[in-house]
Length: 500
Image (cartoon, rainbow, N blue to C red; front, side):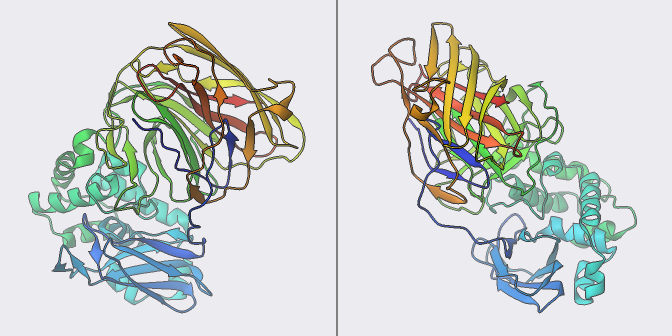
């Protein structure tokens, strides 16, 4: 049984205490004055020489690690910056092909065959020759719109579905089987072999005025990806149906998201918001397809879960927050060393989630929030219910009151913080504004529940809610996931969001 509390927060805030908490301790990741990423081709490129040339300033250099990772500190250079990775070894064999990438912002810049093809399309020529002849004028003529066009051209030419939700340059990943980005690279290599297409052929086609894949290559690539861990299990997108809709796609201005989830009978409830957190959303529906709490991790703890063959039920949301319930299939990925968790999720079970953006919070005033959306609560062993509730926050004291009702087939659970919605000062819930870009193992308090129903068979029963406040000041929203009872067949799980 699992009920992990390895928690963190980012540029938003988490509702701690009952909204079980955002932890302390851990280490602070590199400041956003770096360019870093992974050099890989389906396997990491080890010991490769990385050179970074920017529009102004001296060149920067680095060497890729055993996991293909590299990083440089930008100090005095002016973006955009071009990246070249040459040499090194791939599975102990010498690498003879240089690969390239481009950055218009600090942060993640991967260097792979896919980024190299984007550069070829952007430069309308061989990336190696383009990099060798770079000038400040050349780089200053590159903007994000041109890079986005190159990405669109790449996606259209290759026709590989999971590529539609992943940016090869900026999506952080680990070059191991089962990671969607890495499996796409492995499939690219396999497709070249099966379709008798050379990498030089791909570069030439990418450099042409219209990027079209060589004849038969698209079908070969799709077939090759289907033979990978991600493709074979439907890791790139759910094979079920989606019920519900969002009003606008989730959009974080700073690129960071918060994730809360609750699932039974095996997983429990937790909150993820480290600066390393990567979420993959369906470009068509806006639903959550996958998350990875640390794409660079190569040993446990690893938590990277994909929707697999599940559907998304009760999908909803807007540009600040979205929610849903995976059900009716089997997840894929790795949950702290297990490839079978959460595993198979029945139609009346669920992996409930809320994903939100960073918040700008007021420091005064009291705001009431009414229910804007919720998943159907589920029993760990199976069973559906209904949810209703209200949240109230005093931003001067950061105290949070709740009044929730969860109605299940065998019992109705009424959850009220101490003081209810009238005396917030005595509530167990508080907003934690301090845990920015920090990971930890802190557990805050919970609300005791009376005996009753499958979730609360003993006097030690608790209600827990991992929550977040999202959005701009004056239009903040609240959301999170909850569990009644500890992990097990009788536990009750769900997700809910609230607006003023």
